[in-house]
Amino acid sequence: MEVYRTPDHSFDHIPDFPWEPAYAEVADPDGGTLRMAYVDTGPADGPVALLLHGEPSWSYLYRHVIEVLTGRGIRCVAPDMVGFGRSDKPVRTEDYSFARLVEWTRELVFDHLDLRDVTLVGQDWGGLVGLRLVAEYQDRFARVVAANTGLPTGDFDMPEVWWQFRRAVETAPTLDVGRLVAAGCVRPMADEVRAAYDAPFPEERAKAGVRALPTLVPTRPDDPATDANRAAWEVLSASDLPFLVAFSDGDPVTGAMAPILRKLVPGTRGLDHPTIRGAGHFLQEDAGAELGRVVADFMAG
Image (cartoon, rainbow, N blue to C red; front, top):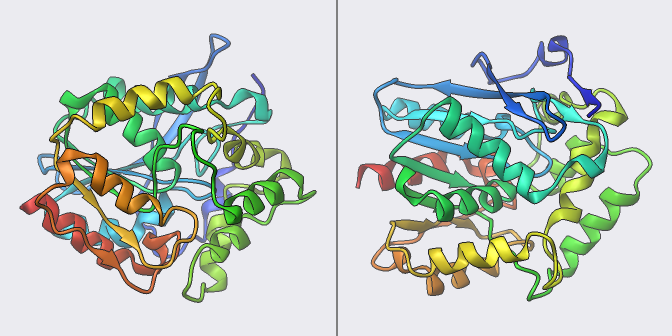
């Protein structure tokens, strides 16, 4: 497997992100290894929040959430998915699959870090991967925060705005990752923040993961990931694991999933599910401190 590793100097001028990365090796399908990066900060003996980002961002997205959570005594683990951030990036889109993304994350957080009593915070692909982990390893989790995410099976069509995004990412000769993240926000983005989202991808060949992930979302009932996602739904729809739905008020991509999660997941019952106001798809960027307070209060309760 041919892999691109972003040079360290690409991250020299990242604003508001003081945490040093840690690294772990996970297995690639060819018998080698890939290096995954993650932030692990806060009190080592504190309750654990696993912060999973989505497409096309990286752990930088959670910087304001991390500030709030660590201030409340919570240990934060924020990985960079393979293909993103400081993690290794296979350069062929064919090297990415839904199953591999789940397995690489599982290997990092359970085999390497041995996390237990985890609170999942998953947004976008962070929820797709994270909800699979919750369903398949319930004993490792204490609670779930689903934030602008879901778990598609291909039985229902995706919204047109998502199809537009997919077509753009698949066909654009050059991908402007910072612009993609900014377009998913409703609040203005400073130039240096936009540059921070571009930083992991100084070469076009580094963006194979960005191009691949939209094609891996199940959009038909016979998708390769559909059976595993349906099995995950069976578990989630019978689980009383506390499950908070914390969506923004301005996400046309996943907004319709909030009432579905509240209806189908028993763990949502009896909870006060907040709506994060004035935020788009990337609610961590638009309203990270508010999301951090929501998560911290949920963990304290």
